[in-house]
Length: 178
Image 1 (cartoon, rainbow, N blue to C red):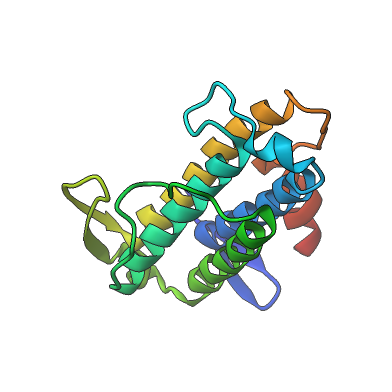
Image 2: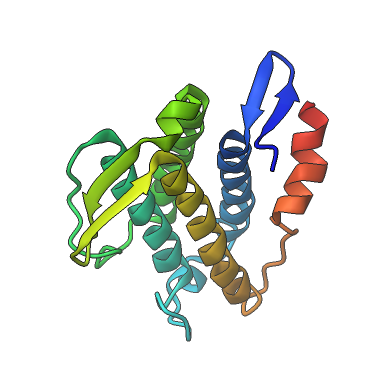
């Protein structure tokens, strides 16, 4: 499988494309979610994290946990979510900064850097070890997975939004930058 695509100014890896996809999909999701009445964001629903905002907060927390692993820092989390999510505006601001961080990281990492194994302890306990590339692929996949839950919850509200699937990103955004 070819993991490189020739782009203006050099070569771009799949990881670079996928971190950009994640950021783009988050823009679409938050743009829709932030137009909802506040009570829709916190309304309890039949899903794992109980509400739209708590689901989005979970994605942020996991991104932050793996950022700590990638930088060799500690993180403050004792679970994969916080008891109380921040206001949606705050969550969007921190999510945007986190997405920017992951995109910038993907731009800096060499092929050798991507293969470096990072050892860590899972939030719930137990040892883990993943390459940097596997961690980046995990945070992209994890965000996509939970945006699917948010999309389902949005169908229980008056909101409607366009597709944030990878093929749409590739067609509408990625291919236009080629």
